[in-house]
Length: 240
Length: 75
Image 1 (tube, rainbow over the protein chains, first blue to last red):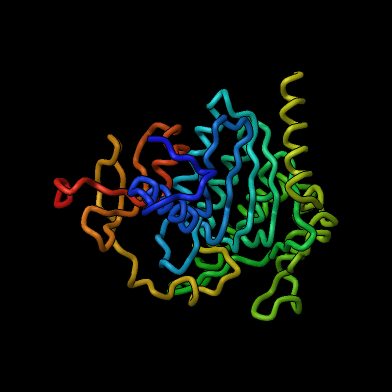
Image 2 (image 1 turned 90 degrees about the vertical axis):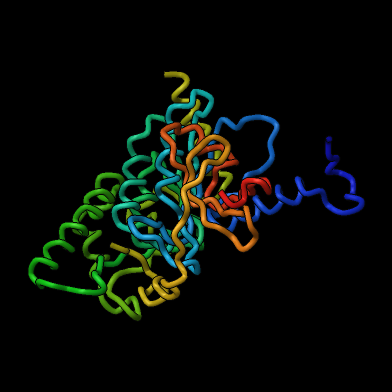
């Protein structure tokens, strides 16, 4: 049976259709990704990194999460599918698991297909390395990025060992950001440990234009600029 | 280890409401899913597969509600 979506549905919604609706709503709730019905396969794929990036621990249900165990194989599929030519990454994240975030960032940075990121709303904490992992990055004028130190919560056994462990974790983040953007390590650490800017913490909130000025993000822009940059990179790759 | 601007007390509240998912076979693939209140109805948590293309399929996105026919609901 075929449904004509341009006409109002008469009578009760069939089970099949209501399941379809349920599923798309459920997907939206869980991963922030909505599968749009399409007749043609898209040559540019889009991935959204939203809410908390969930890593080794499952987070309680009030957290909106990006599940890295699903994102990683998706990136593999995008890399190896000959029909897909580029990846657009949309970010609106409050941060999350350090290692899951770094894993996603490393995967994106090592892809051979063109990648462009767009930070909307926020790209905080571990969202920073993911935003800079792409070939080219954009940030919306109104978006912000928070750079702050990594803290350990819960049980602390040995203070010197804990400090060293945290320091090493932090260095991984600093090194990744410095290697994939034009900010210097000294400047990034300076922003990370700045006092007087955040109410509850030390660190810095960068607005869109500030993130560009610091060399963290390439350009201010929105979806139009991000997509045309991605198309440009795809076309450059074809010519080569 | 979490590196986030959200305070840990907000992230970890309701930790007791995390349910353990069940391993099921759905459309020929091994998945982890959590049972919902209606019998035979589950919410997909994770796909377990080595085929990366399946992770792009709309059928296997986390959060998808999957229903098993009535005769299978107790399995």
